[in-house]
Image 1: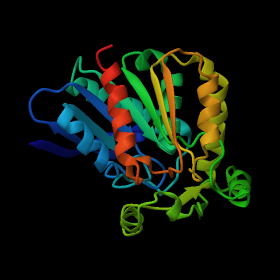
Image 2: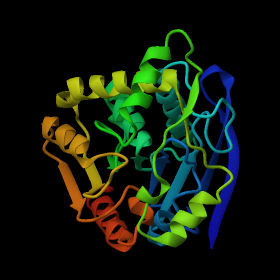
Image 3: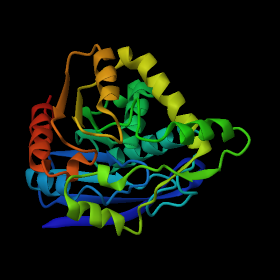
Length: 282
């Protein structure tokens, strides 16, 4: 039996952010916290839940501000610190609910950048975690046109809430047409980015690269070689900058951006489970 719950927690500025949890019946081995990408939400990880719940892992995920069921202008933040501190508060909530239970954290796409930034900015808090997974992290070059990026930087100071479609092709998400159709019909999905988000994102990526050598946590990076949304070269650069010994990067030939929902997802899920099993009791 699977226990599913939904609730909200107060993020930065007392904003009520939606979250949900899936818990296995009986013994709980470890917890995986998932941070979704831009325009997505916490219900986009069904294959991961189906893979890990039978192995006694609990899954916690929340909708970042401006996304999914959480309030806020779609695709807008005042500063990147809002994303980072929302995540810090969420992890503390989970630690209070499950004291002494091992916790892993995984970020997909933009969520991967949120996770990497959180761990580097809060090394003492991150030291309580078992490890981190960056799933197709959007660190480096992304599939947004140069014009849209230029416009975002230009308007960030004078009109930070200016909103524009990212222009990312939905078909770049997965090679499974059923997945593409489901995403297209998803009422919680959005395709918007704002001027302020663009400048905060690039500043954060630069900061992460500059501080990658300070990384001190087991790290797994999973990326598709054919990812045109978050180009794999970005995660390769970060991986090479990390000097911590316990690190692994797996690249899947021909795979697209939504690795958890692409046609090769069973292979990805198995690699994820294997890595978790190797690290949960460390």
